[in-house]
Length: 557
Image (tube, rainbow, N blue to C red; front, side, top):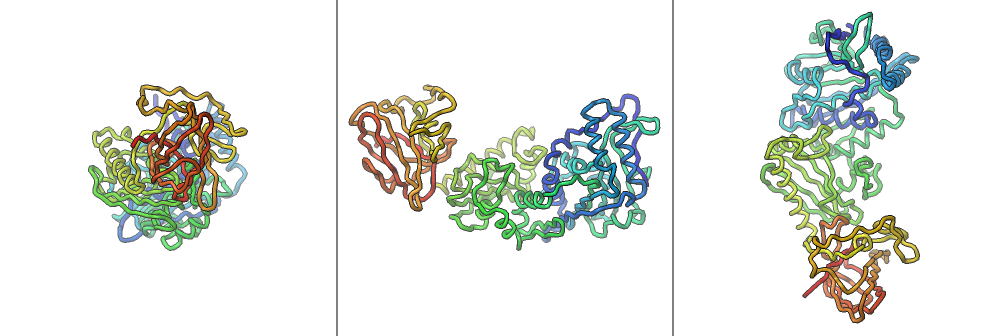
């Protein structure tokens, strides 16, 4: 066996060492390997009565572990000699320094079980011989763009892998694949892509497959040779697994092993709670995800919980699970039948709530798959040129909105809109505010307030009789006290407000009854005030114990 690269013909396209698809994964290759590998395995699930098993194992391989395999180093050195771009030369120098003075390669083996494996004419041909093409057309398929396989090459400083697969038809395939750069070798120009095996192509005779790489069970094993080092890789991979696949693991659709440690439906809760002590989630929820609030919402742990299930237009059978807890991040996570996290959306619901949308329908799953981008982290009609795309998105969005309205008892209304209200009428913690900071009770803003466009605000709803409002919140016992300041232009200024709570994006307004007020009177969530001219200060306590963004709507009985 040896490496085989095609000679470059006249006007064949030349390729540099820096590949765009690989660059997408260069900073997150360990995380991306977990996500891409598991979704591919869930793609190819063989028996739906049993879980898919994915095993990530690490080995050290002497450079002579396979005959002539290490000659890929000579090809990479030739790539540097051929390159004329300084950035390419620097990139190749880093690759060469990684293998120059070592005697063995570190390897990550990714093996799956209860999967279909790959056939030469279809799935393997797509994997090995195409770019941006996928043959994954099975029901429940997690991927559809064919670009994620670049992550395997991006994780190797040799940009080389080995593949061993046994299909459900019993056929076996073994081959090495390398994606480096156009280079000159022994006086001839060669393509950037090479294959390790027999000169005629991949090995398909089971007796010729090296014993160490022979599949005895149906499924696929991918070996990343020359694994890039990372001291924190095990924890990084474990967190990525929990963030994206806890639902599939919890529902016994998936078992994963990472360096010998098993994640299954019996251990998933322990693994999540050990790693994530808090229920809140960072505003950078894609970079620092926290699966715990979504897991507890799904499991009905420490929350008020409700499950909605319905057959909706276009997508069929779907469900939405909503939970309420003071520390929930105010986001909904979206899943398809593969039960891999697609994305999170903060626009439907506000802090103190959490939710999961899941499409369990086979046909709906296929439609949503077509709406995904190459990284499988969005549903967007721009990803599928079909009129059904917009209908599908509207269908699930309307379903989610209806359920959220029911669960939170949201009622829509019109906010008071006056200059600086958006900047001043946010919840302000000590020393901090919305759009500015507190200094001796005054607001210091970094930017001048934007003028209000009067055409967007009905004139009869704008209070003309006071200058400004502001509010800050302070904890009192198990609840919160909202300290409101109002500057009235006139004396004996009688006015009533509905006290509403909701998100900063103004899409939600929820009524919460008033428990007490220091000035004026109240009934339910309506306060009535008789303001003096100048500064008026009052304190409001609400009947729940959650911390809110408070909003006021002028009330006319």
